[in-house]
Image (cartoon, rainbow, N blue to C red):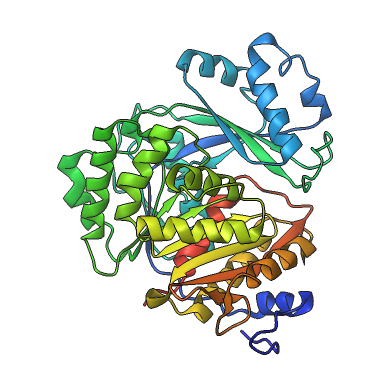
Length: 421
């Protein structure tokens, strides 16, 4: 990676684009992913759908209300439908429409990491249907060591994907494509691995030095979170090389957030999230939390979350830029910067867009963060003495073919490609 900007001077747009284009692709280690895998029925939202009898049926009222709110704010959202019978009726309305693809954070990460060059991906999914298994096994780099019953049903989520301009957005909102997801509430058994297979299962992870874990939003009781914590501890003890990452979703239930903060984060070195998820965690975890409206506010919240929970790493992906917080004694900031640039380029290509650009919003975000911290050893790297704060403007794809699952793809790429001392 090369950049002519001297220390203390931020690159301009063309320099960032050059750095992103020419960053060296790192060697990606074997990775374990778990635990939630499902199928996504991806449905494109347009005026025809919004005005259709299906979406305007009385039973679809909550779906349409939440979808429109997501579209007005251009914010990814998910509704976990508590009533299985209601979810079945909602899904039946869209049977045969859209397209089916692998979903769930672990499923998305497994497919993506194999595609970008991870040679051995171990996917541990306690609940996976036959059709889902067959799709994953088409890639010889993805291994499914956990056997499930042949009659396990495939779980299908509804993913409403939209582009800006279908309806007007709220004042002050940056128009961008996003999605609204309607999901059934999963049982904790879709996340927790039976204790009698722990040791044997983890031994099959082979040379995996990274673990990208998700699905903790489906846990609720203290016993469930304690079981997940024990599961992660056993995995962490498997190897001194193992680094564990926890990927968040948008969940506002205080009981779930408390469980993740108290039982899950202490077993991990790394966490990933978007800005909305960071706000929810910060409000739950910190007396200092307030309105996180600027990139500098989000950087401060990310540092607080690391300090309070012992995380060595926190990655934030949001529109126009990526933010990474790494503890100083565990990080080479120049290599972590390269990881973010590699992630930016990788995801721009994966989007299928026809041209890529760095937005003014991304450049402004980096400038605002730079104003709050001392400069680090490379452009886009800053420090408060205890943590490095690394920020890069990300490439945005115009006319992107895909946005579903992008958060998980961004986080898994950045985590697996990052450097650890």
